[in-house]
Amino acid sequence: MSKNAAKKNPDGFTENDIRPDDIMKKQHAVMMADIDYILKSKADFIQVNCPACDQDNSDRAFQKYTLDYRQCKECETLYINPRPTEDQLADFYKNSQNYDFWNKHIFPATEDARRENIFKPRAVKVQEICDRLGLKPKKLVEVGAGFGTFCEEILKLDFIEEVIAVEPTPSLSETCRKKGLTVVESPIEKADFEPGSVDLICSFEVLEHLFSPSDFIEKCGAIMKPGGLAIITNPNGKGFDVVVSPEHSGTVDVEHLNYFHPGSMKVLFERHGFEVLEVMTPGKLDAELVRKMFLSGKIKQEENPFLYQILVENWDQDGDAFQDFLAENNLSSHMWTIARKK
Ligand SMILES: [Zn+2]
Image (cartoon, rainbow, N blue to C red; front, top):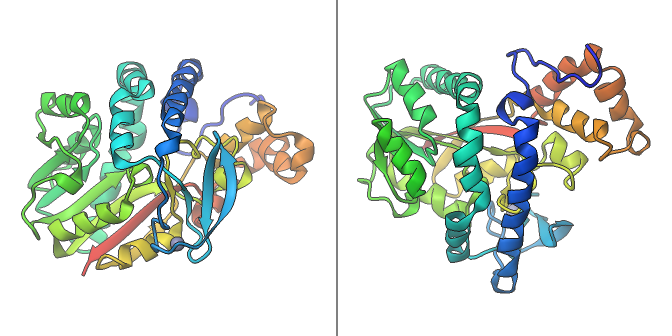
């Protein structure tokens, strides 16, 4: 295999299958327009405490897009502060060119690959987790259902009686309804569920976008039955690409306000009456993402000869083992947390 060829991971998919390079170039332009849009209202951004431990004790970690990314000195969560208000965020997502582009171009062009490589394995994994932890869920709520693909796939597995898609974005909730799903078109914080009625909540790549993750987890706890499970994925602020180069990491962007890590997910959940059972980082693409930073010249060989050796010179031989090492040691940026409502 040539050094420039995309590496196949053990599941046989590459980053290019779910984020094709040519489309991603156009996406970069609309993303920059979005960044300009949100930065126009920067004067009205507000200060918040740490999204995990709620303390006001942080250092500036770095700046990107002129925004301050701070790290909590108590629990090491990374977060944008000051940040857009809830109203500014609602306006941003309503007017986002980037989201419109994803809905119109990237999701349709990649839905098959995403279904096979992301959503089917995700549904199987959720079923395995429930089996392993002895939960026979009757009612699942997916918060941030997007295109509805996960709900479709978990319904096919036929082990849950009721599946509800919570999705606040009108065009996406419309897509979910067209797929025949039960939809609540609202943010979860404002959704009308009977307290203690849900035994499984899943939410994938949502928490990092929220003004208040604390309000989100609190509401999840309020509608859950004791003993129910919350299964949440979000980027790990101590993940490989974030730590190696926040400047070039796609994980670090203006939409991602909160970068928890395995320890601080525990802090967040425990404040709201949950017990964290497991945190894992089963990512597959971290090494490839940083390898691309070297191949494109964003990181120079001389800046990190050790990583260059693993990710470029010895890629064919060592790439898979290195990625496995990251995943097994909670060093991937793709993080899963499983918490039980007490
Ligand atoms: Zn903190």
